[in-house]
Amino acid sequence: MRRMTAMKGHGFSLDDAVAILERTPAGLSALLKSLPDTWVRATEGDGTWSPYDVIGHLIHGERTDWMVRGRHILAGETRPFDPFDRTAQFTESQGKSLDELLVTFADLRRENVAALVAMKLTDSDLRRRGLHPELGDVTLGQLLATWVVHDLDHIAQIARTMAKVYTEETGPWSVYLSILRDRQR
Amino acid sequence: MRRMTAMKGHGFSLDDAVAILERTPAGLSALLKSLPDTWVRATEGDGTWSPYDVIGHLIHGERTDWMVRGRHILAGETRPFDPFDRTAQFTESQGKSLDELLVTFADLRRENVAALVAMKLTDSDLRRRGLHPELGDVTLGQLLATWVVHDLDHIAQIARTMAKVYTEETGPWSVYLSILRDRQR
Image 1 (spheres, chains in turn brown, blue):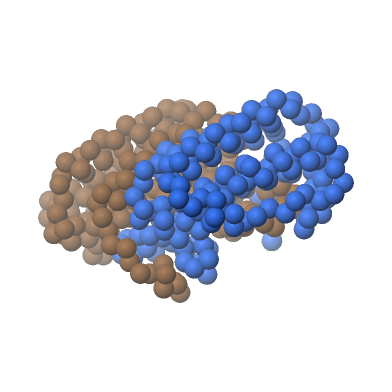
Image 2 (cartoon, each protein chain N blue to C red; image 1 turned 90 degrees about the vertical axis):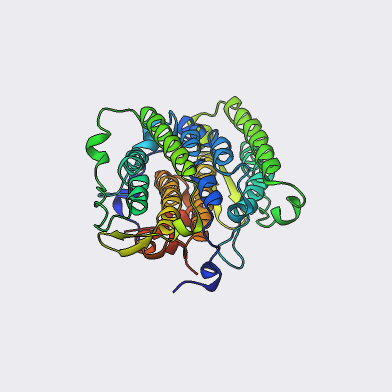
C-alpha cells in the first residue's frame, strides 16, 4: 500500500521530535490568531471539526495524553493507558475565545516540552513498552513520534478545513486545488 | 462529487482573504525556521516537493502570478495570462537557505498585500474577467480566492510531507493517523 520512499524509515530522534513539538504553538498562533470566524468556525461538514475545535483537542492532549502516557510507560505500569477522550473539547472549550485557547495550548506545550527534555531520555528508555487500550504493545519512542505526527495531522486538517470555505469561490481554478477534494466524505 | 456542506458558498470577502494572506508568512516561519533538514528536505517520494521546494514555489508565485495577473485583469488585457512556471524554484532557490527563502517570501507577500489593499477593490472590480491560458474565463475574485486556497493547500502539503517522515516510527499508532495515507501514490 505505501510507497517504498515513504517506508524507508528515518529513525526517531528526540531532537528532531522536539524541534517540531516546540514550534507547533507559535505556528498555529501565527496562522490563526484573531482570524475571522469565517475561517475559525468552519468545518468540513457534519461531524467534522473546526480549527477552534482542533485547538481544544490539542489542549486536551497536552493535559491527558502525551506526557501522561510517557510517565506511565517510564513508571513501568502494566495496566493499559487511560483511553483518550476525543470529544472533551466540545465541553472544555465552551465560553473561551480562540485566542485564549491558543495561549493555553502554548503554555501547556511549553511545560510539556520542558519536562520531556528534562527527562534526558536514552535510547533504552525510548524502547520501553506500555499497553495501549486498543493497539496493545507500544514503545515510548512510538508515543513521541505519534505526538509529532498528530501535531502535523491537525495543522494539515486546519489548513484543509479553511481552504474548503472557498471551494466555490475559486471557480475554474478548483480543478488545480487538490486540497478541496482531500478527505471528501 | 462534492458534499453539499462544502458547496454552500460562503461568498468571497476581501477582508477575509487578506486575513489569511497576511498570516501565511509568519505561520510558515514559525513552523519551519531553522528546522533540521530531516523535516525541511523530506519529500513524499519521487517527483514530490519538500517544504524547502514549496517555499521557493510560493516566492515565484509572489513574483509572477497573483498580483501580476490581478493587474493584468484590471488593465483590461484581452490576451491570456502568461503561464505559471511550476518548477522555477528548482533553479531559483539554489544556494539559498530555507531561512533566507522564508524572509524573501515574507517581504514579497507584505508588499503584495499592501498593494492589494491599496487598490481598494470594489465588488464590480472583483467581477472583472481575465483569460487563463488553460482554464479560460476567470474573475479577479476567483483569482484572489485561489491565492488564499493555494496558500492553505501548501501549508497542508508541508505538514503532510513532514508527517510522513515518521510513518514507520509511529508503529501501531499509524492506523489512527490518516495523514500518513493522504495523497498516497
